[in-house]
Amino acid sequence: MPREFDEKRDFVRVYVDCPVLYRHPGSREVAEGQAKNLSGRGMMFIAQQELPVDSEVEISISPENELTPSLNAVVKVVRVARYRKGEGYEIGAVIKQVLDEE
Image 1 (cartoon, rainbow, N blue to C red):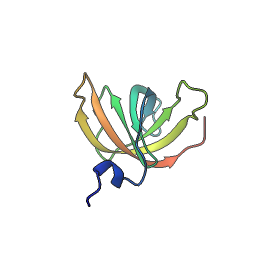
Image 2: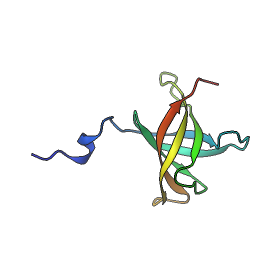
Image 3: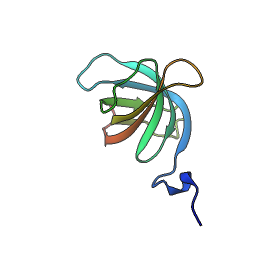
């Protein structure tokens, strides 16, 4: 019997709604977006500007819940689409490297 698509994932996708800061490595310019989902391998967030596919950005997610640890990582953009529920872009990214907390 075929499995549902979500069940085929290596990691469970967790839906979140918290701010994400992102910047290109080596850049001082930081932009803010909104994280929408996160898994052990990747994430999706909303950005106001379009990011090129295959580009890498450093992200920092600090959930408002103190029990949830923050995440600092380098991610590679693998998918970009206009955000259907408002302005901006849906950015799908693969986690390449987890960074130490700043």
